[in-house]
Every structure is written in C-alpha cells, then in structure tokens.
Image (cartoon, rainbow, N blue to C red):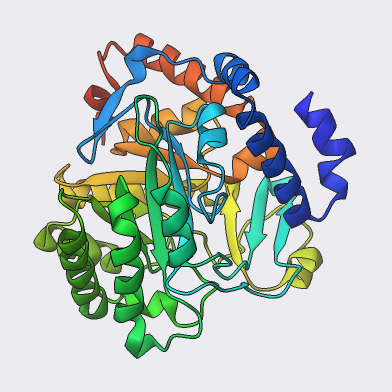
Length: 365
C-alpha cells in the first residue's frame, strides 16, 4: 500500500515537502492517545529477545533512526510509535539557521538513494533544549541521542566554542551525545576530522558535558565514509585514548561511483551528501575496520545503506552494537520497522545466540 502511495503522491512531490507532509501525519497520529497506542501495537511489536544494552543504555532493540529526519526533536514519540528502538535528533547547531537554499533534497529512485545539501537547517540549541526540557522521562520513553554540529557562520577557529555552547544546553537532555564533524554540507566541517583538531575538540566537549550533567552522558563522534583507511585507524586510536564511548560510522558520501541513475541527472543535482543503498559496501568496510582496530573496546553504531533485516544483522555480526537507518525509511514507509524487527527476531533465533549483544562481532573474518 505504501508503494502505491509513494508512486502516486510522494514521488511526484518535492522531496522536502513530502518529508514535511509525512512527518506531520506521524506527529498527528502520535498526538491522539488511542490512535497512538493502536498504531504502536500494529507497527511496533516488541520481541523481548531483541532487548540489548549499549552505551550503558537499556534499549528495546538495536535499530534506531539516524540523525537528519527529526532535526528539532519535534516528533520523537511519533517515531517511537513506528517502532524505532531509539531516535537520534539533529543535527542541532549552536545558533538557529535556515540551511542552504532549496531545492536541497533529491531522490535517486533507481538507486534507492538520496542526495541532500540541507546545510544543518534547524531551530538552534536554545529552542531544542527548551522543547526537550518539557519531555517527561518515564517507562516507555524512547532513548534519544542528540547530534550537534557547527553553525555555518562560525569560523573554523571558533568551532570548539560553538560546539560547547550546544553541549552545555543539550547534554542534560541527551541519553547520548554525538559530535558531527562529517557532513559535507557545511564548509570546512570535515577539516575537523583531522585528529590534531578533533582530539582537543572532543576532550573539551566531554569536559563541558560532565560539568552540566550529574551523570555520565555517552559521547560519540560521527565520521565520514570518505576518510582514508589510515585516518579511520587514527580516529579509532584517538577515541580509545580519550575514553570516548563510541563512533557512528558513517555519514553521507561525496562519491558518486556506480550509480544507476543517469549521469546527467546526477550532475544536474550537483553537490551534496549521498545516502542510501550505494553507501552499503563502504559503510560495512568502515565498520569492520573500526571493529578490528578497537577490538570491541568502544561502541559502534553502524549506519549507511541499511535497508533490510539482513543488512542490519550483517552489521551486528560484523561488530555494530547498534544500527541506524534513514534513507530506506523514505522508500519503505511506516511498515519498515515492523519488517526489520521480525527479520532480526528470526535471525537471532536461527543463530543460536541468546541476545543481540551475544551476536555482536561474531562473523568469521
């Protein structure tokens, strides 16, 4: 049914407008108590066997929604209603910003992919923090990660203070915190991945988070798939040295190799980060490299090209403590998480492992 809706309605709409419309419906359904429980019962059946612990957090399952869908934390309950085991909001910047001019989101339907150059459009850390302050933490409240990035107008030399501004405002509301230095859509941002810059930045963010929270908030860094293998090793070593809690791998890619979409159309779209199925192989490679380098001493959240339960299972057995998706949600619709959960349950049962955590990193080299 969703495929028909996608072909008849969403496919013909501007992708960003379609996103806003679909997200409105999700939030509307979640705002009606009886309807919310009904939708959750249908779309988000929970298999207790999928419960897992990662980053010191108890989660109903290993599969969450990656950053970018809910930039301002306005639809957390609705997304949990659809079955996501945790939700990462953002990217949130120190100051509000409109992002890049539209059009800035494009579908590559033949590749089951997206290209975006959104540019961290968000309401800013003050408004997002105020919104999260009103959330009641209770049983059944979804785990929420907060992804923070650099405000575009802030010079690279002043990036640390900009990240610290967001950290002080948002860390008290985060189940985990992510430093995003890997989006290709903010000028100069990826330069911060150099370990001599990234190390001090993460150290300062860790210190600031500890100063404003009474408990340890797990801190992760999100890296790009376009890094050289040697740079990935350096970041892994640095993360271990700093006592970082984890790494999210990977963000979108600036590469355009091997696409089925007409080359002229890809060139017409222009700059932006590519996500979805074409990222699958590289994202898995980065995961395997990180797992081998860190030997399970820090958590890894794998994201990029995850479409099916089998994709998610492969990430888990190759070393991912948790898995995220996003682009496939656009193409698969609201029943996606139900299918992923059912598939993961079946694979866990067939594997002979008792829990998801037992299966992490068990694939033969």
